[in-house]
Image (tube, rainbow, N blue to C red; front, side):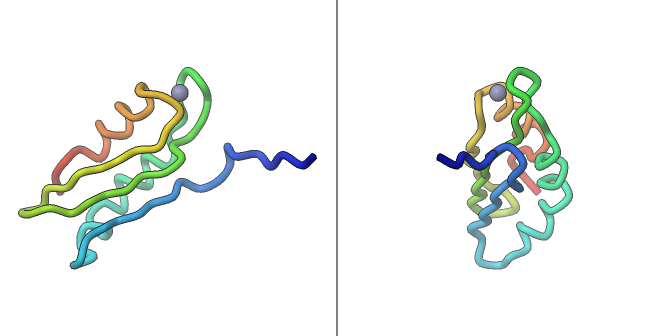
Length: 81
Ligand SMILES: [Zn+2]
């Protein structure tokens, strides 16, 4: 049975924003998040989905190993461009 390692996969990024500006503005922050590793589990963030809202605000949904890593990721990306 083959079991491919999940941990070295790049973070999946989905940006739901009509203008595409959000993706551009968040590029650097998301790159930083992609390099995060959970201090407890040693795992990277698996995936993030960003939903654009009005006036530069956005919501983000994270797929991570635990809340601690989600909090770290959110602290970097925040809620506004
Ligand atoms: Zn963790």
